[in-house]
Image (cartoon, rainbow, N blue to C red):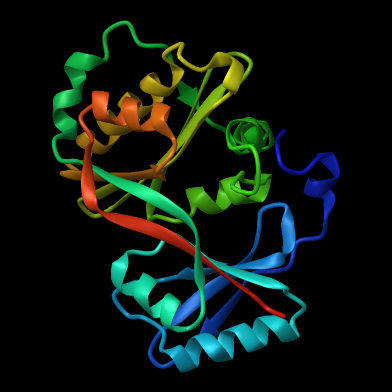
Length: 247
């Protein structure tokens, strides 16, 4: 069953805030459908918070009424820092890269059509997300907008009438990201996901992006198979999401 229900979207959301440490800062927002779980979004994983920063931040979140804190997906160095501060792994992700997005044009013949995903459709996209990612990893409506805003430039696309799948891609200079892809479970394996991934790669190629990254849970075999069919290759590094209870 999808996590949450119609009332989840009407729960009051805490306003985002910024926590600052020794030369580093992070944004805090509530986890989708879990208003008492804080999500730490590091602005730059090249500059990491110290253990003292993390201890100060968790205390501040505790004072604000949060009962749990989670990180975004962390690479190895940031992951080790989180572990040293008492966080534990709750999700492991496979990281894949595509280094030749300009070669995807020949793969687009006969693909399903896609169209712009409008802000007014974010609620419908969230419903698809909740069905596709049953449990606590689904995105609420406002989180769809957060994903769009996560990179300097983004492209949000949908497929199907009514909406049956969506994807959000982003780019920052010459690096691209397939940030989210979700297909309604009853309409999977009909080419919608493939069409959206190809659309993403071709948009990034037009901007001369040379490297595209995507991640997905280690047990999401259908997504891994799709990405690899379209030219993504698994990287040796894994990403990890961390959590700490604020007792």
